[in-house]
Image 1 (cartoon, rainbow, N blue to C red):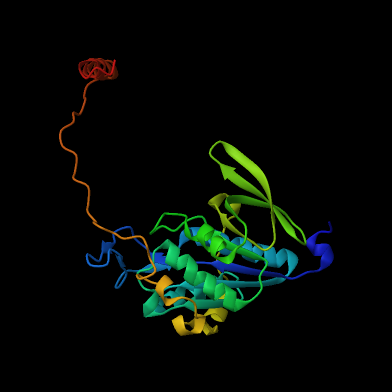
Image 2 (cartoon, helix red, strand yellow; image 1 turned 30 degrees about the horizontal axis):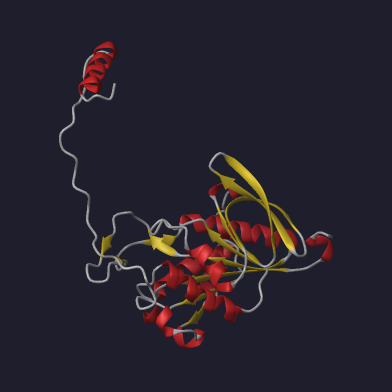
Length: 271
């Protein structure tokens, strides 16, 4: 099979990103069980910057277009402007009060509606997870909604041809090489690249860029599958674990500490 560059085909790449709190000190709405995002500094999900970078690198190598898409409140437009500053060509924000409170399943469904509205594509790239949810479920869930194959935890794109892509997928004790047909979805790890910093020219371009906004009526679909209503996951209770009490601080020279620890383990019948 001829390589993609030999065929002079332009790639149509979609990168999914999310705006997340810039801190781990977040509060939970006791009624909905969702994050309270108002008044908290927000950034592009750090793992998504690797997805953006990989999409831009593929565009630079093979030609084509990179479109960033996100679901979130109106302020998430800033994250999409940052994506444009980092090299994306276009950006789409799916924003509507109807989308609020979505879990990973409802989020994947909503994103699938937006991507279908965008039209044809060759490759969808996601970060392997988000820092606020930490589930890694949206990427694979999105692939299932679109009916395309997916490969998670990709650390390297080995080759890209007319109808398939060859990837290195990270495993616990190494990696495996995987081939997938196009179009497909991949989620990428931090090992795949080093994200660039935006140039001054790209920052100016991003500031003037028009962000496409689509709401629930624009996307269509089943209204019972979006937002809180479309989320089968229910947060029953949110709480901070009780601090541990007791314990013992062992002091003294190393030999004394070792002897005390040895005797303590014997008392507890671990030895």
